[in-house]
Picture 1 (cartoon, one colour):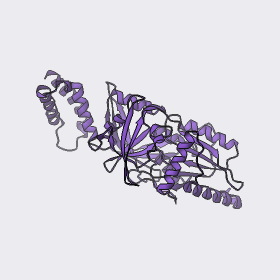
Picture 2 (tube, helix red, strand yellow):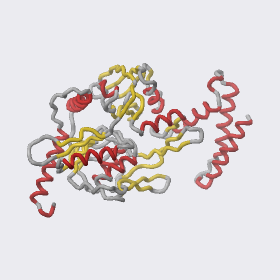
Picture 3 (tube, one colour):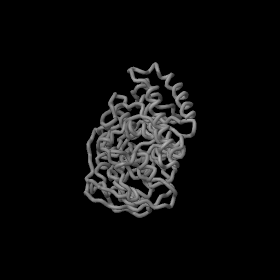
Picture 4 (tube, helix red, strand yellow):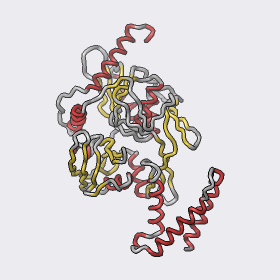
Length: 411
């Protein structure tokens, strides 16, 4: 009981600093007394004394508080926080399946390339209904992610519902170390005509992404690239700073690419200074329903600032800000603190970013595209596949280049 009183005193000190922010008649002290009383009763009477340490009860209370706010806020114990930090460095252990909650169902946003999930044929939009036989409808997002992760070499069985075919199937996957190079397939696209159209694909935004992109663009420019297709399809996002730096490859320094609004003051995100010249050639950004978060920041900024045409489908619509705050014991809180807006003041969250030119893939075309990528990663020559979205992008760039050639004012 004495430790509970100490907890109340310490908490009261924190709450006292927040008194000026209270706008209603609710008393934080009364609510903390109720929480402390509940903790006291649990420690006194609960049948299983292996579950009632102060640490366990406090961590469980924190998880409950954060999980009840929205699908993206969460409490991370020290191990989970360390794992999250490792994710941003492009290497971690797991299945390589990026999941989120859509309409309350755990849904695959994207299977990362070079991962067990990608190799097994899991698709964006697949719904995870069981993990190792356990139903997921009672799990929080954090609990589901923790079950997907574990020791390298261990097997995990996912029961998947595929809405497009109404098929339920089990996938047995083996956890592996996931290494994720984020910039892929940099090339000059083959095709008729004199225009040399480049192509680069970004799979996610992590620490080295902007540097990797810069090197890829330098290489393509030395090959005489006239225009570029930047493919952000199936890119689930990642580090905001990385997305801003990617925008900086195509925009002048100190250009605002996004801003946030919440209970805290508005914050603007601007491009930094660059050593190399600004890349001014025509640009198309390919997006689809699985382009989320950082992908939407890049697409929305380049669209609103008239730097690129967008081709594809409206993006996912994940535009809320999660601030990660470390706590003294090595744990952390990921808290939704604001929502992202594009430079043109368009809200991303639950709206997405719409393309200039709508071009969609059928379910069969999407399967062929992802299968071709899997075979290529395995070193197998994929069958010939005509990507309608990419073809539409090439047509638009060829038209832009032809117009610029014939119109002196456009040069």
